[in-house]
Image 1 (cartoon, helix red, strand yellow):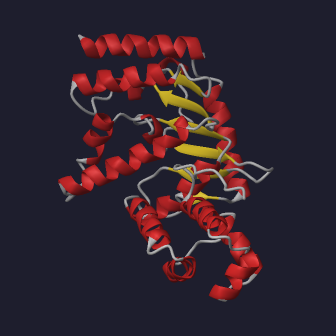
Image 2: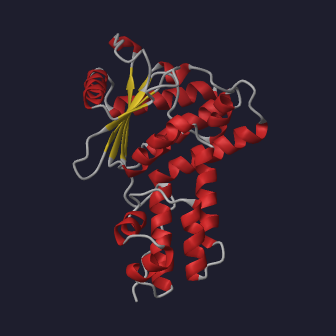
Length: 278
């Protein structure tokens, strides 16, 4: 009997659950037909669950646990995955799955270092200033943000194309030691063959992206790209609207052509590290 490999811990909740469900089914010697008969589910529905194309319910996880004699293994897994997702704002959760499945991510950030490249200390400085937030909540949000960064540690991570406005290098989000550590983190990240950093200098006089940051996720299997739009609004944060995504792609290119080269950008970041050191 062939058992599938352990799940990628940075895949989406649906994918992780589906991989574990199939693993436990095979280990228990159940065919899809046999399990479906026991839990009163169609084979097509079970296939969608195992392939990560359908969200699992706690009731279904409990049924499978009972039939396969797993105790509470799948229920506990689903609860854990949902707790991790709960640390992120509801409007952000759809983006999380797009981000994890994307082949490449194109980012424009005019205000701060993007979450995927933040250090814990830099993230803490940002998150701890949310009105009314408790210290425990801050730490939970930081843990969720660090978990997001796990996609960059995969054997085949998405390619990151990141453009930072020069102001990001100068804005004192935290004390100099934290700022120095953050930009050292950027220089270390830039050594990866999957991460490309550029800086849009003040001298370019480019104002295209000053209304806010955004990210475009290029999806696999010829699926259309998806965008995440950063703003003060709580609506339309994640967009799959083709025309809107196209406009953002065009804006990204207008910003990119005015950005410094990769080499020049890294030189500017190195100078920033020296500035924060002194």
